[in-house]
Image (cartoon, rainbow, N blue to C red; front, side):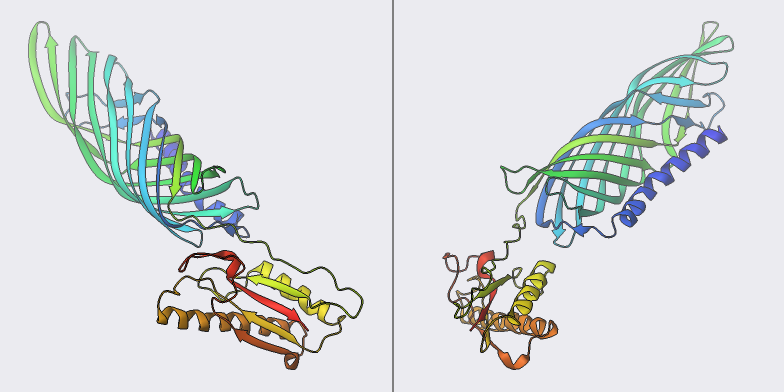
Length: 380
């Protein structure tokens, strides 16, 4: 019994350590942002480990409960933080048939089932491993769960036979760890299928009220007491769906002018795109600026014009237009600083913030559009 408990405890600790090891393994992976509200649901197979029993009365036998594979299902609502992390609130349910009871010197028959249900708060991290068709994730959760026993145990011990019934629930603190992968559905924006493994446990002891009816040589007696169980460890394999209500758009490709023609040549331009309400440079944006800086040394030019723009979100109000004007100038200043860092003389560069004017893509007023959130680098 000690050996079985030790193995189970090691398995539980190894499952909880999985998330930490995955984090270290994918430390160089980029976060795949889920932003805003989402809902998800999943279902699959539930596998219970053997549970030890330690009743409070000598009239109930000690032993080990066994369960058949069963079913599990869960639903959750969450919020993506747009940086790889997300948090969610989950409700879950599991059911497994009671398949056997093992105790030295006891011959038994069993029936009934065990159910679990609970509420969990989870934190998860999604990863981008460079493949746009699959995004692994891992996480952990804490909450409260209930173990509901509705079982019947008929056994023979000594010269008597006994029938034991349990039909009540016991609750305690619960925790879980999960690892899975999301596969975006290409024809439905925001929808992903999920594949997942979960380790779930409710802390012991689980105190269930039970009664047993004894038949010893035709004399019947009833016994009442607690039937305590431990080692409630569950493993689940699930398939599910997740829907994001405000999915992040794919980053637009940077547009680069063709290589310079022999002088006299037309003005050449480079486009650098920005996330919404941001003046931060992505790695792709830095690469475009570096190309522009390198090409400026081999071109005949008098100066470099850097024009910053925003999309039309917020343009409905005077305050929003003022904000967009300031944001467009910040973007232009960031590009100028990056050009100087790449070796271009600051005296050659002039910057302008043009707000939401001159959009590449015509949109309704107040509409977000990734192609319009840009800075144009123009050689003259």
